[in-house]
View 1 (cartoon, rainbow, N blue to C red):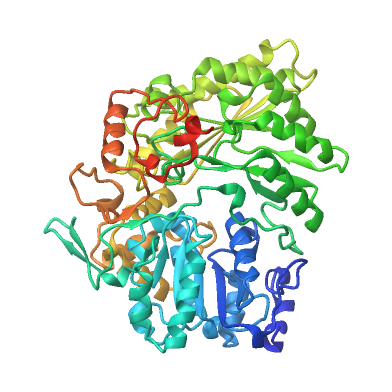
View 2: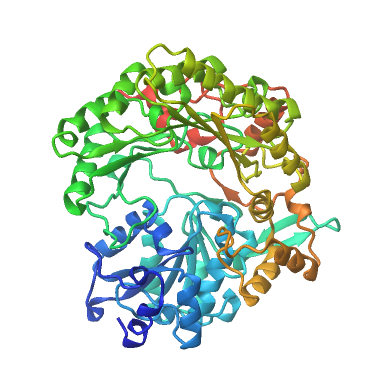
Length: 615
């Protein structure tokens, strides 16, 4: 670490965010390195170090002898202030070197409200914000993650977006870069060559033309860039790279435990869920692969908890034998197993007995809507009696705390649908006191949490308007007034951040000028209450002559050209339109294992689409 950085550490709240030096970090000799990659997470250390994607790609890149991948996190406000005061640019943890000298500056974009933090990190690094202002074959700014599905609001700042899963495409681009540099090619020549790799989107190679009403008229590729950028996907997860060790942080992080994916994708088709559609088809790992990966991670890190990661843990087809195999060693070694994302209809008696063995905290379920009509609208395919039966099983198993997650502001929602959330919470309370085997002498606590609906690209609801902030607030207060029991707690998410999330989620390239001004005015950490300034954002939109409601609160027609129409995540637009129309009629669609609905993901020739064809 550079001495000028070290001198600052005694003046900040958590020096451990900036020191590096953790168990299992990778240090390399610069003389052996051809390509330096700064893996940037646009949030603080505790958040970034909890993310599985950075763990996988960090280890993958560093397996290549000529690549040194180092981690970079956004400095919190106290450290940022000191860095600016002492003229210290943004630096990487492993070497302490300023990232100005790195070949690649890579960002993972997990949340729309991290965009300003990404730009602020570039500013702190003293790297030109806009792609057009970076000229040499270095400082290539790349980005991936779920928000890359609509890259347009930050298209002016990123050279390359990785569309889909990154295990292969990232390395292909890095290898191409190495070849181009050897040949003495220019930055533009490298970017044009990179655009020919499947899963690579180079925004500078596309012109966007607009209609008089502000909507997109056409998206025009140039210099032989493809008309559609197809996502990359790893079909064989058993043979997809997964590290056998994680970096072990020296300070507490958000999710301080071992993590292993059990499958990618989701069979369910909830119509609001972006991840469920973008990650189709479902691909499972084998029991032996999961068990082996979990054991190696625990051995190399010392973690005593493993989280089995997926969009819906109980949808793993071999969940019972998987737990049986893992319990054969986790119980002896006192390692607990957590199963996030359990579905109400997947909570069997056998699973209850397993969970009692491995975890005994509160249970969380996501009915998403209070009334059956609304659950049909969103294609949740969960029924009230299933929820009550599941809660009764949990109460009989010794639990007395249940969290239920819902959305408000969903398409076609009425105030009766909102009140039904409180009614459902009361029925869960009643189920507890009607359960003969409930924990003796312990009261029940039911927590209702609501998030505001945000229409997202590549979902059947991508054309739907978000409720106005006033309407969302009225619904929040209506639900609060509908709760009559002290056994029920109600929490809700601030509608201001949800509004901004909707603006950025469905925005186009015109938002880049707003982002640039936001960076100039020092805006960052918009997902943190301490830093978020809604009024300042509204002033910025006005200053730039942009109406944010045009993006958040406007219904789109099915024939409108969407800003992300040149991106292909494998689910065709016709299917999404049909699903949206079915939502209007409160009709459900079977899950992918019950019946194929022809979404388009079968073109990948694997996963759930082809399970029945296995020999």
